Image (tube, rainbow, N blue to C red; front, top):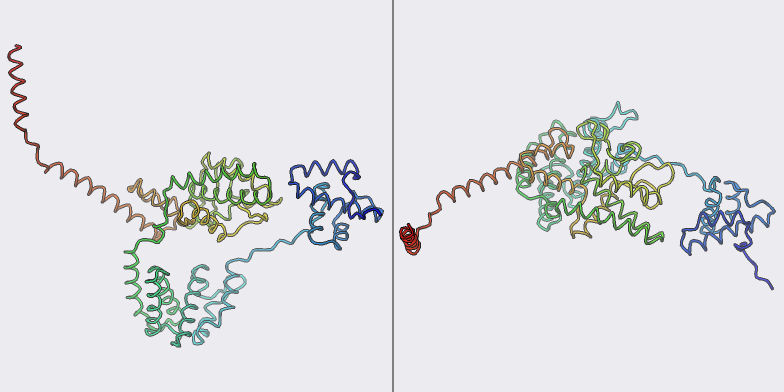
Length: 479
C-alpha cells in the first residue's frame, strides 16, 4: 500500500516554483531547508486537493489554509510562501503599539501607589499631583519638578512610609521616624549595600516633599543632617572609580569585538550564531559611539538612521530637546567608527531589522531596544572583558577623567564634551579635580627644584686631585 504523503515531493514541483524556491533559500542551513521544503510542499498538496492554482497567494487564502495547521507548520508555510512570492502579503500586519510617555507612565504609577502615601498627606497631595490632558492645568509639583525627579521623590516617600508602617512609627517626616530610618540606612551603608550619597539624596527628597505638602510646617531641622551627609559624601571616592578602565584599552576592546563579530557572522551561518554576532557587534558599536561622542544612554538608544545621521555617516546630530543645554549638538564621526557603523548596518542589522525600522540599535526580533537593556548589555560585555562592569555612565566618567588628567588646564572642555546643563554640579567637580592635578604637578616641580638647589655638592676625592696633578705634569713635559 503506498504511503500517504502530506506534501508534494520537491522533484514533482512545477519547475518555475522549484527554481524560485532554490534561488531564495540557497543559503539557509540544512535543517531550515528541510523545514521550508516540507511546508511549501504541503501548500502545493493542499492546492492540488482543492483544485486551485498554487500561484494564487493572498492573505485571506493563507489564513484559511493555515487555520488547521500547527503553529510551527503555519509559520514555516508563511516563510516559504514569502520567499517564493515576495510581492504577496502572507503575514498579518500587526498594529503598531504607541510607546507610553514618561508622563503617562508616572501618572499611572502614582495612581497605583496612592495608598502608600500617609492618609494625612493625601488631601493636600491631590491638587499638587494633578495631571491635566493638555498640561496647562497640572498640579504645582507636576509643573515644578521634572518627571524623572518627581518619580524618584515619590518612590523615596513611598519607601519611607512603608518603613514607618513596618516599624509601627508615625508616618510623617518627624525626628523620631527620620532617626530610625537613618539608623537602618547606616547599617546598610556599613554592610556596603548603599552609599552615602544615596542616603543624602533620600533625606533631601523627604525634606523637599514634606515642605511642599505642608508649607506652613518647619522642617529646618533636616538641613543640618543633610549638610553633614553632603560633606561626608564629598570625602568618599565615587563607587565608579573602582570600575574605571583606561580609555585606549576600552577603544581597542570595542574595535576587536566588532571585528570578531564580523568574522563570526561569515564563518557561522546558523541563526543562533548570527544572533550572538549581531548582539556583540551592536554592543561594540555602542561603546565605540560613546567613546567618540559620550552622549547620554537615552540619546544613544534612540539614535535614528534618518533623523540623527547624514547620508555618509560622517556626522550625527542631536536636536535641541535632546540636550541638557537645549542647543543643537553636532558630532563628527571618525573614519574608523564610520566603517564600524556601516559594517553593523550592512552585515548584522539587515538580518533582523524589518523594512521601515529606522532605529540604529535593534534586538534579535527587529524591534528597537530599550535604554535599560542597552546599558545592561554594555555592562555585561565589559564585565567579561575587564572583570569590571563599565556602564555608559561610567564611560562618560572615564572620558571626563581622561580629559582632566591629560589637560587639566582645559577642564572646561569636559562640560562641552559631556553636554552638561549650565551650572551642573558635576562640571564643578571635574573643575576641582583639574585644579588638584595642576596643583600637584606644580608641587612636584617645586619639590624637585628645591631638592636640586639644596643637594650637597660632591667633594673632590684625593685620587681625583692626584690624577689632575699628574695630567698637568705630563702636559708640561710634552711642551
